[in-house]
Image 1 (cartoon, one colour):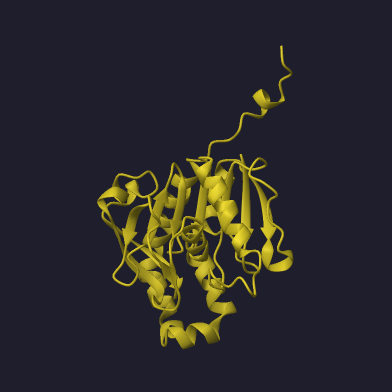
Image 2 (cartoon, rainbow, N blue to C red):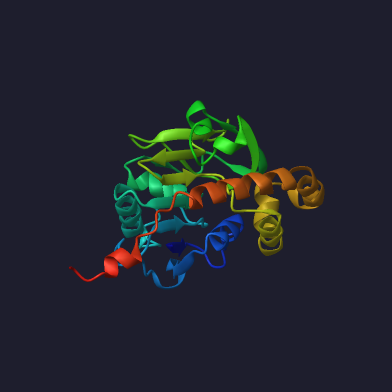
Length: 245
C-alpha cells in the first residue's frame, strides 16, 4: 500500500491517520511542497493521496504556485477511483479540483465542535460508525460550495460542507479528525499568539476543554482514519511484475 502525503505547511504531521496507516502497513512518501513545490509526477506510483492542511487558502496560487497542479493531481487520483483524502485546506483544494467555489474568511471555527452527520453520511463507509453526530477538532476560516456530483456527509451551523465524497473514495473533511489531543497540544505550544487572537480564552481553558472533549474526539478521529485507510485498494505488484506467458 503506497500512499503519497502532500504537506502544505511545515511539520503538519498525520496525527490519528499515522496510526491507521501504520496498522495497515502502508508505505508513506512525503511531498513537502512548502519546501520545494515538488508533487508526484503522476498517479501510477501511489495507491492513495493525502492532502494535509495549511495556513494558506486554496486559491493562493501567487504565493503557492503548485496549488493548481495539486488540484489537478487530486482530481486525477479521484477520477481513477483511487482513495483521496483532503483534510481542512486539503478538502478546500479537493473541492476546487472538482469545480466548486472557494469562499475565504467567512467560516471561522476553532476548537472541539459537534458535527452533524447527514443521512448519506450515516450510510457512507467513512462516517457510518459515528451515528448522527460526533465531536472533532476544527481550525479554519475558509469554506467551499459542494462540488457537482459530490455527496455531503457532514455539516455544522458555520460550514455546511464539513465532509463530502465524490466518486468511489475521494473524501474531503473540513474538520481535523487527524488532530488528536497530542497534536492539539503541539499546536497550542507552536501557535499561541494566533490562537489567542482567533479564540480568546481558549489557551487558558485548554486543559478543561481537552478533558471534556478529547477522549471522544480522539476515538472519532481514529475511527474515521481507519475507515478511510480501509478504502485504499493497493495495486497487485505481483501481477504487474509477471512476465507474459
